[in-house]
Length: 268
Image 1 (cartoon, rainbow, N blue to C red):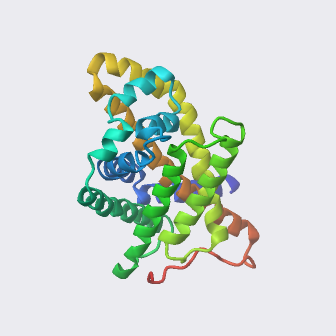
Image 2: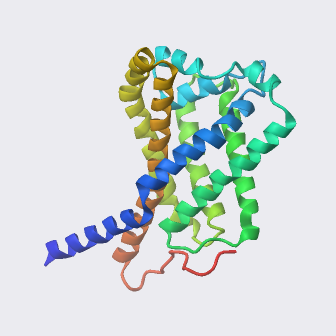
């Protein structure tokens, strides 16, 4: 009897994974990230022309790859000063507009995780706010900071990342899911990103080096695109893991536990 119940629960969890369509969403995450968000972040990270490390160095830190692999990544992008000088105000505004579609895609994934209907069209301002905060955080991580090479850096990065993903879910879902219900998903996402960084160090670093020899710059692009797919899996998979954990905790609380899944009413 107990094994039957466990199989039924496992089946429901697998059904949620299939309904989310995690792989397809991760592919769209990677495609939009590379086509819309990456060009915008290249320009933003180049704003600090004196102390900025540029997008290539930031990406190398994010991947956690070896110095040799970072050199290959650096050959794909312009130097910080060049990227900033050759960008026009119109081009930057256009990139920002296209970048809003990234927030739309992320919101759609979170709504699927929590079985919520799409938000109303006039709530799109949330995407602009989310994109602005994301750019601000990444800009601060791309400029020179006094504690960058200190042990405190890892703790601060994890804390800020967890808070960002916690707030992102709350904002993009329009406040339809309580803060407490969203915290497990934020923590799971950040743990997944830490695991992905370790995986990148062990797998992607040698792949970049070998791909650069075999395929040139295109090989490096393929590895970066694969890494972005992994980011998408972690972001949506972490939110889903948080939802499943939240539901399990509610089940164990029994019928008297207050249900806090945010409901399924229309969005704001």
